[in-house]
Length: 311
Image (cartoon, rainbow, N blue to C red; front, side, top):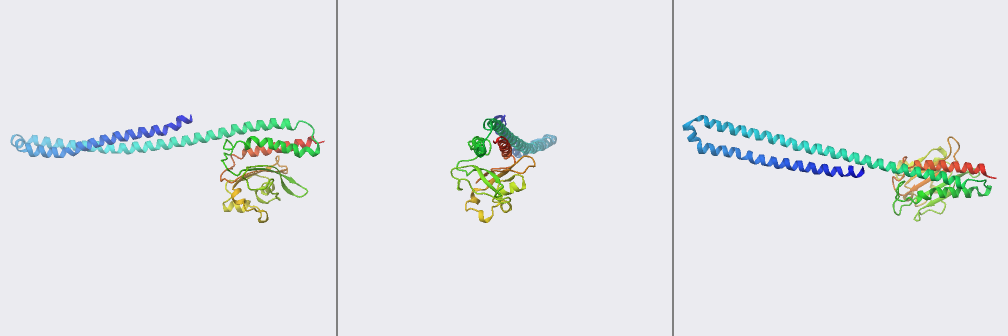
């Protein structure tokens, strides 16, 4: 379907160009003919007027009227052909625009289909993974290990999809995935699991956050996703920027777009926040962050199941 649609604009352009060329050629030919009508008439008048007049003046008027009618006829054709040229070009441009819109819609639908196909496969994988990792009673001191292992395995295929069907990362992009869990004893959101690009400038596990601090703390406190495609915009920066005491020199260039998703179930209190960041603008939006919403649900369910199975 894509190949057929993508080939149409070129074909329409070729047809339009051919029509315009043929009509212009015809118009030039008619112009040449029309140009010679008046000189021909003058020549006839000058050459034979005397003889025609002496024999029968009616013939002279026949030639005169015929020349005028011929001139009018050719002029009408020229005018109609001119309009046809304009109309042909106008309608051809309309067709090109419509085909261009169809092609963009087709490409967009293909991207959406690819995204949903990929996320569907991911979720099936996550469900199977959960059944393998959480299939027996768990000792208290190994709950964190089990959960960290599960989250790591969950995101392995996501991270390896660089330049692929989810977020479309490019080479040397500074991407970053973090799962923060809330610690009630010190009221902090602490980095529990993290994966980042080799060129990411931050430390191994990153910073911790209080409720309401930065986009991480806001997502936790408001219990709703905080998604920003361009944090360099002033109105966005004022809402999501970290407190001055926690800012790092690389923040503005590194955390340009991000999605912070609270890890929770229904109206329950969140247990943490799942965060994805990038140094590229427009990397995350409400549409492609749906997979992160689903991931946070899987993480919550795994955490709840581990709590049930602890001994």
